[in-house]
Amino acid sequence: MKMQVRGENIQVTAALRDYVEKKLGRLERYFDNGQVKDVNVTLRVLRGDGIIEVTIPMTGVIIRAEETHEDMYAAIDLVIEKLERQIRKYKTKINRKLRHDSTAKIALRQAESVAVLTDDEEDDDELNIVRTKRFDLKPMDAEEAVLQMDMLGHSFFVFQNSVTNEVNVVYRRNDGRYGLIEPK
Image 1 (cartoon, rainbow, N blue to C red):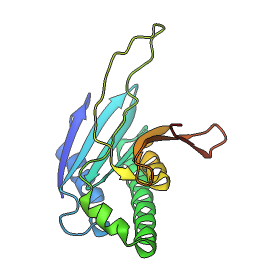
Image 2: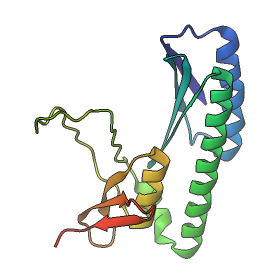
Image 3: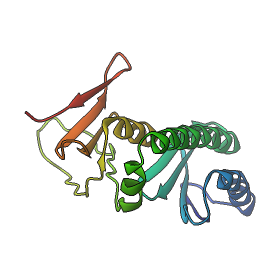
Image 4: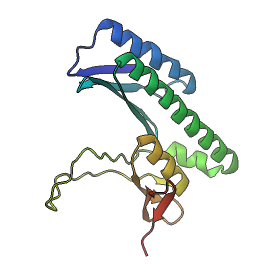
């Protein structure tokens, strides 16, 4: 795994870089050889709090976690725990699906891209479209889309339904459950 550690409003010292690399190195046991090539780590300080954001792009999925803490080293520990939970959840889900559906193996191999949505933009009072994103939709079922949405930490996820070949949206409801939007 090649790690790219960068800092915003913080000087990334050798000790901090070594700590991040050591902790993220523990995650290698979850991946097959060559499954993960790059890991992007952003360290930043905002209002005295240390924020760490880790993005692990893989074939067909992006694993992302972010943590905030007064102590940067504690934030690193917390984000590693969050990433381990996400990876274990994803691996369990995929392994269960592969056992039950052999066609999922073919779809997993043919996956070329994944939809990544960000909610960085703030809403204005006006209804102006300030940013447009284009991305390829990966065919998947609703359960896999919910898993992707949770791993990215977003409240909705746009995907191509592998059963109907139509564009669908899954979203997190206020009661904590999930909803699916399908076209008529």
